[in-house]
Length: 137
Image (tube, rainbow, N blue to C red; front, side, top):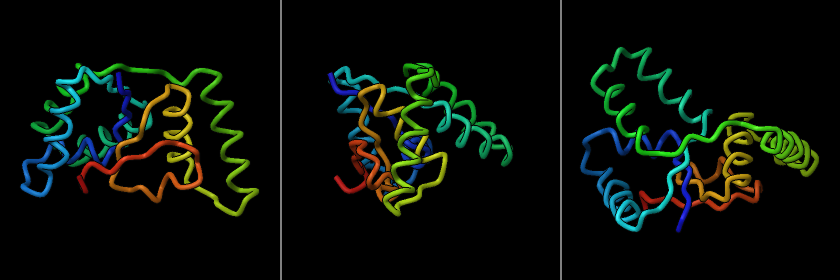
């Protein structure tokens, strides 16, 4: 069974009805039929939900909450925090600093054995996380 951690941009593509988002929607449906596991990263949840809340996007908030219900929530436990801090330090030492949120998302995916699905592949370069861009499939 495949494990996926959807980044905020991918979740947004699932929520918005736009023809350009169809490859992401199609792949998501394929993975659902395969019984793939979708793991929610709390940072991604926060990033997306705060924006929808700020915009007063009640319909999208409701759709987001419904979408998340079918996914597996995994908290940040001590191993994730350790990996994130070690990863941040290693990236900085090698001259590849990353935003904290991206390091946390990468560490969460690594600890949970999940592939990050994002259109922002560059945000996770050098982290060791497996990354897929379904918008290009």
